[in-house]
Length: 543
Image (cartoon, helix red, strand yellow):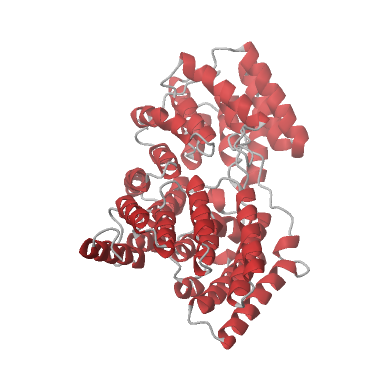
């Protein structure tokens, strides 16, 4: 394969072809293309069964698939059996991977880090070891935007590689992952061009620029990156005659593409991409359970409907499980039912409020709380772990994540209910709790909170004629969703309601400028255009 990166590592083999396939697998590991990495390492072993690093590579690829733990363990044990035939440098790699795969918990992780640090110290010209270790120790940023200790160390390792080898694909890839959830995602923009030069045929690598564009509020730019990645994905699938589930990036890219279109106001296109994703089988890296697929990918259409406040469609939507064999997963069923109750309740409150509507919405809210609090329910489930992976510092999606997302939904629904009942103070308090809980979720890609809780709080304040508080909520939303047309429209509404015509005009114009390609029939777009036309007829400042 060409155009997938530049990584190399000399292994003990007498077969030049085996060495070439090993380097291909190594590059694909760095590209997060684990199925193809496995194929390359398997071919390495076929060409030279004594090449211990071929089995190391297969173990690394397999360890990213939650259901392949036994196979990953068998591969690394076979690599261990061949350590007498490989170099000391290769022995470090095999010992590190064996510690991680065969020893559960912190002990294995600590042993892995110790072994990799020793490898880096003894072989300073090896660029792969610090790149692998950097991604492994990444631990993100706290709620105040400060880098955690693991993140500090990861960036130190990556800076060392990039200073001497600025075109290294692996380091540029991991650097983007390191900064995308930080307060300064723009620090990864220069790395995107390097990736596109170095690995234009690796779908996930082509996709990476969209992560940064989305974070920086360039939703149209994100859409273009994801469309480009889709082209690379589908060309590969057609060439290899394999299903979409074979390509790890495919579902993730479609989900992000739908999210970018939604944030750009392209509702119909977002629905189209979400529908394309709906019904697909889960790729191997998300196939641990129905819920493992449902959160990042299977909820994509639901998130699109919720982003636009289409609660009727959201209530009809079935969260995808990714497999017919997973369709009876109890945790996924609870997750799906929870969102249906949320959408039904919110839809009732969006209609002309009646006593019966409020009563039915309260019944939905109570049922949602019951799902959360029942013995054996989502909130009581332990996290679902995956096989320890040398490549992946990103945790597998787990049951606890579903409980946290539905907790936010429950707070939102009950907060809206209290406002509808006339208890605005209690409603605002619950919506404020939803905002806080949402921030605790941390960074996800794409955001699993389809519509920020600040937005609901802002509209609750608008209905209460608390114009300045509403504006503060929408401005807070813009901290995480930069240049969001949804938030900008809310700000315009706050100025309009307050009677600040000049400021409202500027805000409506800024909103429309942020949504140049939005569907023209969206209520927000029509309202802004109508308002500006009215101001033009009256003249700014006219009574």
